[in-house]
Image 1 (cartoon, rainbow, N blue to C red):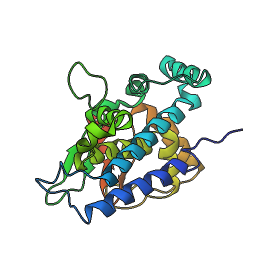
Image 2: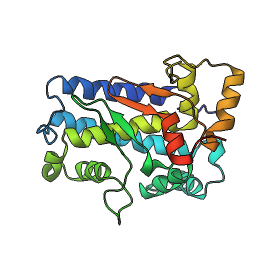
Image 3: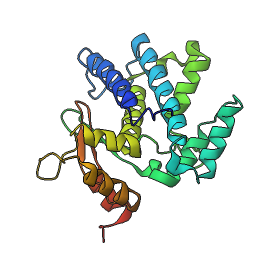
Image 4: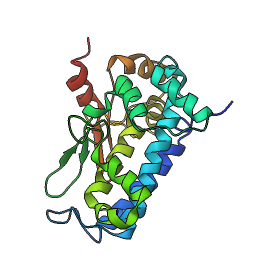
Length: 234
């Protein structure tokens, strides 16, 4: 039986490499006021890699057995089976239902003040996808006229999207708990055991999520998000 790529930890390892690349770039061009529109071939390659990661992540998420009743996930799988293109609007719709993607916040550890990012917020009221995805598509199809848009701002928002998917998707969430990287409010580490896993799986669909995850660039506080989106647990 094919093992889920989130559950196996592959997607998290791929994500960490993308974050490391962006962090290395920031050592030469820091994310300061006035630098957001700085573009380069390195950022072009990074944005293309992040976009591909997000695209692959969405397809893997659609294969998660617990989403077998999600009609949009079914349509994604049918298109993959028939080797058809999966438009971004389809997974965005599918996982808006499951995870409220458009409302999710990632904290970027910007200096001197942290910045709240909503990586999957539509670019305007009539759009379905975020601006960075439109830019990513433009870069794929015509680099010559879109190169200037391969900038720090685009890379940041795309990477925040990749980070978010790797934190909130249930198999990855469980894997990261096994890695002991989720922290409690008091700073302690959540333990992981068969009983703990049972509770995590049980409470997650109810919005009762546990822990705060921090990387060198980002923070995702699932407990704060749960209260904001679903109210305090009963």
